[in-house]
Length: 302
Image (tube, rainbow, N blue to C red):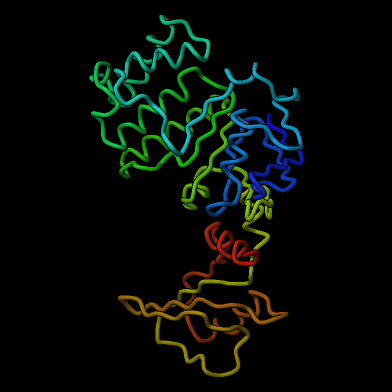
């Protein structure tokens, strides 16, 4: 779907992107991650043809990105851009027509989206009369109304309460299920693990990590496990095949320990050590979250 090849972008001596390359497969939800100033917005603006790269190229379905692709892209910017004093219904129709829809088709689709998101009474309201979260909902509809092949969402949950955030999350998943490719930029790591198939992490203008979420998490395994057992508290003060990271006592006669295996020690070694001492209810590997990986990688390059 989207092939980003060795993109370089500078602003008045500041390098925003340094040879960034990404491959975003058709039908993916792809997370573009990074701290403030990493280069995410610069890359998104290049994909949307708001600015051009100093060097490098972007290909859309195998064709070099050009003006004809604008109608096939939907963009929800972090800084919302709807006209505050224009009626919402007419504004949605106007924006849809800019993307190639007829007025009749725009109205037809708007009725469906307005009913779906509880916006039926919004036709004559103005954007300035809505809360930030409701403005966000209107902007989301404007982004997807023309049924784009590529949907770019920059902090899409900003301003939403938990209920509306869940509604929009479900709509994103449904759009993806229907075939849309989604490029998703956010600081909410829980959303990344819930929604994204693959990610790229930018920091200080460079791509420092990319790949499928499940593969990245597995690659950061660090021999950490959670164990729960019942009975008397086990005396773990003698020589252990592991290091205790955390230890807690449950409400009943259960205990929990978080451990890190010593070098050349397997899970079977741990079980052989513990089974004579306790009844094991749970032994579960603790794989680092995307949030932990994000923090670790960003702190490596500061």
